[in-house]
Length: 289
Image (cartoon, rainbow, N blue to C red; front, side, top):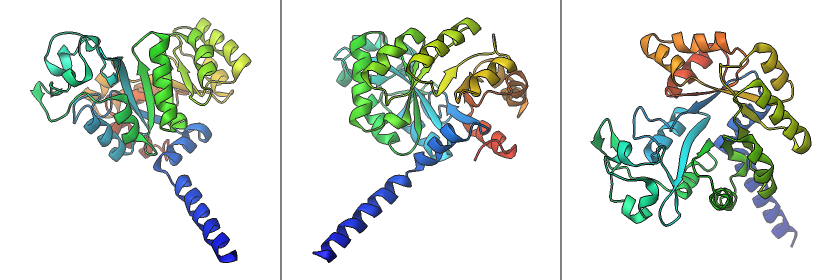
């Protein structure tokens, strides 16, 4: 009996050890406990090498060592959550119509395009992405639907995979946060702030229900004093390099990232179309693990 108990105890210890050694744990530790380090988010996954929002692009982001993969969710005609940025499928498949005009099986007939050419990749489901990313990378969910039922569906799928700690649920309207936390407090919400006034409103919500791990801001209202006030509460500041800064980066290496650091020196989560370049840039400067 004692030997049996010893074997059970050892098996339990090995199980805990395996859980602690998930690749995503290093990312989560940095996200929550190393605010001096800047987290890297891949916009629509690693879409410079594979079709955006595809399983291949997500695999590539994982292999590159990116911290967070940003994905976009829409609902099909038969209410399956799938990855697609646009309301229509035209730009990414060359086919007409909206995501919701097709069933999931109908959408599987259409190859995803890369640089205008068809690939072997198909539009993935949210469940497929969760299974691929589990224990490996954080996910930023840019939710494109607006019904409570679809919000609940996404939350249920995240919980079913046991991935509450890996997901950031991005919302454009911060007033939705209390409802979302009412459904599942384990899934962290990232509210979008469009002004200093909205930051104050978000902080009022946080005072009632607990701090948000990150607030999505932008350069239009950023100031170092505001940023310091936000980060002093243990909340990260998410900024986009998309547009202006990524375009500067296309012209000259490090130019865009240098400018973003000057414009928003306390931003410590950055989304970019060039995540691999940003990761290398940050590591050179000792701003990433």
